[in-house]
Amino acid sequence: MFVVSSVSLSPVNPEVVAGESLTLTCTATITGRGTPSFTWTGQVSRGPLQGQAVQGSTNTFTNMLRIERVSQHNPSVQCMASISSSTLMTSVTLSVSGNFVIKA
Image (cartoon, rainbow, N blue to C red; front, side, top):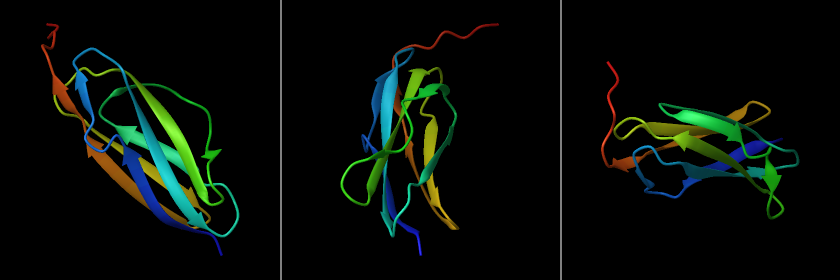
């Protein structure tokens, strides 16, 4: 049986200046063998995923998301890790500072 036993995002309290980029890392721990799939959702302009699931220790995998440009106040981002029928999701809210350009 394959189970996603935990999932976490880092940094835990991400801070970014409006218009700048940021990389988030999602880490999943599984029991059993196999490689989880990662799905990212959120209210940001995303760049390409930085590779696929990368195995760290025996049952720990990571996946990175590069956010190209943060363009709104305090958006949230979610990471979901899945293997077989087991899925866990976690989210963070970005703390955004600076001025936003509003286009008419």
